[in-house]
Length: 464
Ligand code: 9MR
Image (cartoon, rainbow, N blue to C red; front, side, top):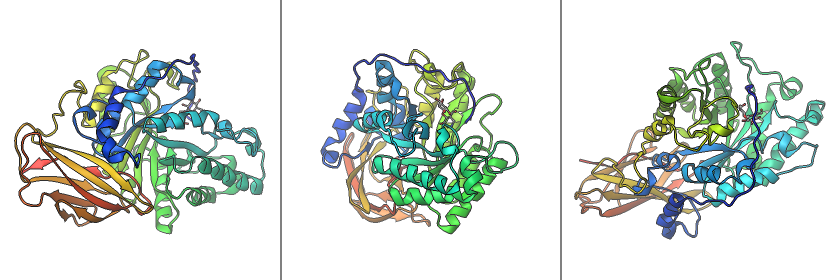
């Protein structure tokens, strides 16, 4: 845990506001998705004016930490629902909240967040299964054999309760020491079970919910340093030995003493090159005005430049409730007004700060949107719609990148070519693809998930 004074705030329950914008997006895709209840990513008119929708244009999510105690506050909820596409319970899934007494599980507050998110079509990150902090005293008091079964049981109970509802779990959190040693952090798990506890936790997690992405999550690993090298070596070892790990979470708690490192993007890339997704999981940046905005822009641009950087979560909706009690590290101020940092993030995600009802500036010539139209146990179908701008177009191209180990197994309504990795498909129309001003056409494809259910990343539509 990084230490800051914690501010606890409770508010009386008020009615929940639904976002008009989200409703619009749902209506737009209802025909295709009604039965499947799946998520549509769109780059069209109403999509680009919010963080979640701007990120979704490139197949990424943009989320926030949420505290169940604020779900009764209307401005909190309306900002959450309108702006974000993913949530992480800030404290409600931690060990002290879910199993404060051995074998007695309490999911009340976490359930509140998960059902709110699901009702809004948001994805959920699970945080966190095995962590030395917010750990009840009874766990620390166990001997090795009891501790091993308590750890595996805790993972099993939580992941079973939320099976099918969690996009990615932080299976193990903050297992490495600060400083230059790259050593493991002392904890009941480390001290009694030894280095192998992390591998065991991941193996147990995979066996309980094979469809959830399993992440290792930590702070001060954002740049290349002794701690991130140690995590990197662990992930490389896991991937080489087939220990199940899908993603690494870079928390991204930045302040003047711990600024955004200049090698942030290359650090993300080296992890991605190991064959795991990378995510920014707890982003907040101390400061204000243009300096803060510029740091946010750098972080988001780094993620956008790494194709396996699948999403960003900020650690709270509003400065009012940040864990940094005297700070202003988030995108909305204490009155829920978007800050300069908000605009910087939106722009870096490829969104526009214009009224959400304004037309998408896009590339001018054409725009693209994506929808998952059908899902089976091992694969899903995606559909990309290409829409001409204010002039007629022909000979358009759109790239679709699927995420390892996914593979596209079939395509229709277009002529694909592939890059050498086989992951990047460039789709051209059959024939010259003539489209009148404002007219649309669609192509489709089947993705074999191979355990990875993330949406493909769309490149922009270009016209030759
Ligand atoms: O934001 C969380 C705060 O409300 C809790 O009091 C604190 C307790 O440890 O945890 C904060 O969240 C932490 C997260 O779970 C793990 N990474 C560091 C975060 C900030 O301390």
